Each structure stands twice: as C-alpha cells, then as structure tokens.
Figure (tube, rainbow, N blue to C red):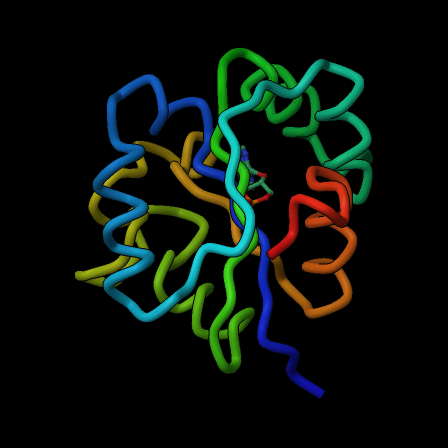
Amino acid sequence: MATNRTFTMIKPDAVANGHIGNILAMITNAGFKIVSLKLTQLTVADAQAFYAVHSARPFYGELVEFMSRGPIVAAILEKDNAVEDFRNLIGATNPADAAEGTIRKAYATSIGENAVHGSDSDENAALEGAFHFAGREQF
Ligand code: CMP
C-alpha cells in the first residue's frame, strides 16, 4: 500500500551548480511538503552503505566517489502517493530520456550525475529517511 512519504537527495552536482533553491521550488510547487531538510555530506563509508544495493554494479565505485565528493541536501517529503509522484517529478535516471518539466531534464548532466535521488519504494523511503534523520528531525 502506498504511503505518503518519500526521501530525496539533491546530489553534489546540483548543489555545486547552485540549483538547491530552484529544485526545492519545483518540489514544493508540485505539492510536496518538506518534513525534514538538511545540508550535509556523505563520507565514503556512508555512500557505500547507502548504495550497498548497487555494490555489484560496474558504476558502484564512480557512484560512491561522486556522492561523497561534496555537500548534498537530504529531505523527507510528504504528499499523497509520494514515492510514485516524486519519481514522475524527477524523471528518468538518464537525463537524455527525462521528460520536459522534470527536475532531471532541467538540471541533470549525465546518467551518473543526475541531480536528484528519489526513493523507489515505500520501504526504501522509510529506510533512507531513517539513514539521514533522527525521529526528532522528522516533522
Ligand atoms: P539513483 O537512481 O538516484 O540511484 C542510483 C544511482 O546510480 C543513479 O541515480 C545514478 O546516479 C547512478 N547510476 C545508475 N546507472 C548508472 C550508470 N549506468 N552509470 C553511472 N551511474 C549510474
């Protein structure tokens, strides 16, 4: 059953390129309420743990290096049907395939450096949110 929360990160490429404000505006204009928010940076060990599900993939090392190289914005978002609606808002993993009006179409530069993360299931949204935020930081 769908829950009403998802987890996102604005990735190091989009933070470094000055897109935090515009991406948060796209998120809130699409009807998502921000219930947790922080600027933070993943250590290499954090990134390895967060992306452990991809550890056998050929791009894992590149992904870990990228996600730990600079600050990110982590957030928990609330909206009816949050996981599916947010994945529609961010667009396809590869920006070359992302639809007009999506965050990745506007701000992603490559399949690896694709500006934003969105949880792929309710279960992962809960796990990923808890990875970044204590209970008292979830409003
Ligand atoms: P995301 O879907 O947020 O989480 C997994 C990430 O792995 C994905 O975004 C991309 O950043 C990265 N990724 C997926 N496929 C590739 C690929 N073929 N080459 C490099 N990075 C990738």
